[in-house]
Image (cartoon, rainbow, N blue to C red; front, side, top):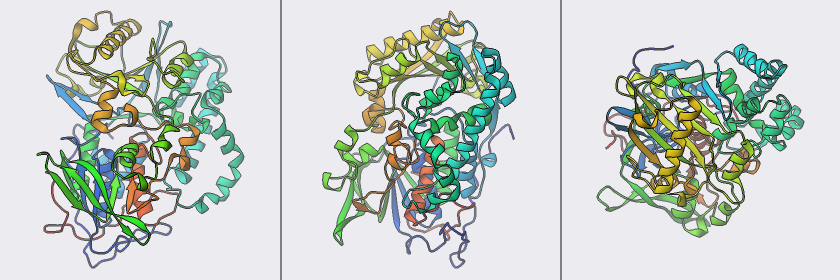
Length: 573
């Protein structure tokens, strides 16, 4: 459903305090499930995972305060405007729409009520180095099969088999692996999972690029099927082939766009959190998680933070959820004896890529580009080897992602102009530098931006692109490290290699500190906005002792009145 404007969030009346909320078998979420007396909860970070965590905790009966280091919410899913050009500064692919809709339904609304979603068709365009004609990936599976067949006889039917496998793997993952905290493995002993163990083992142990090679030989088609590894912060040779399920999302399920950009998604989740009673404080940099000894262990007692004036503050809480980068949470906010994941743990981890982001406001139109565009280099292995190899370096040339939101959303740019967001995957290394406005970033990054702009101009057939740029801003790995405390300046989080996927990714609950939980892309289930929404839900399940593998029933029962005078409630300030 597409409308001309997205409606405002409407708070719903809470259930009366003396009326017990509904429950569902396997999901012990009731009005009394949370600790009595509206336990104070602090959420660290107001990215989408932090805002979603706040909304769910508040609805479950907690008095929630969110502390955000930056002056705006959204985290990596931020926004920036200049001279009438509006840019999303992070995520730009709206995939897994049912995950967004489920999250909204937990709070008594829906994605259709909160967002104005547009179907993109083509979903995206792919440019190949050395090939004059790009290819378009469509919303219709049949058209994509026809495309594959044109590029490689016989590949159309094999794509159908590939997508059938992707869909069944996705459905299995959604039922048993995405919504579980892995606090108990007993629910994973279901007959369907046990019957599929031999196949699951093969999908986990075989890399994605080898799996795709079983279906298609043409390099271009293998790149289209292998590229979803980048969404997972990894490379096709490093990513388990179980993640071929991602192809179901774009080749079968289609790509949507929320008008107003992803800032609109953030606004909707923030408003819902506030409607549930959460208080959001920006300009509040958390400096430590406070604990006290309790029965031979430690339990959380609150956080210390520095406010906008630079004044140190203490906020007491019986529950703390860190939606900040997990490496930062563990190594900077906790003393060494209380770290579940100390520095030595991270030395054995594989980081996802860093990135150079380039935001361009361009005079005139750019019909050569679709809303989403991918530029793939000929030497695929060398490109990923430069990023993930033993001696990481900037790939030359680089495979590049270009988003043109003004193709779908005229409000993203002034009349007669276009908005481009460019992402260039790089090694995760803050030493590569910081970006800036109007060429004001570090010299190496700005020179790379010039090279990438020239590459887009050549590959897409826009020879005058550089001369038409009115607005330019770059962001580098050092910006991600400084602004978001990102581990090694990465743009996504730990890569989804085998030993960093599913239950091997790490727990969403501290083993050393009672009452400390984690959410976001650096913990389970993983990278991406849908995964961050799910991480908030499984955090709540973990807190409430729910070991089921499926999503919570909709809507989440309200735990009581949150109107005026309730401690912890209030509007953002």
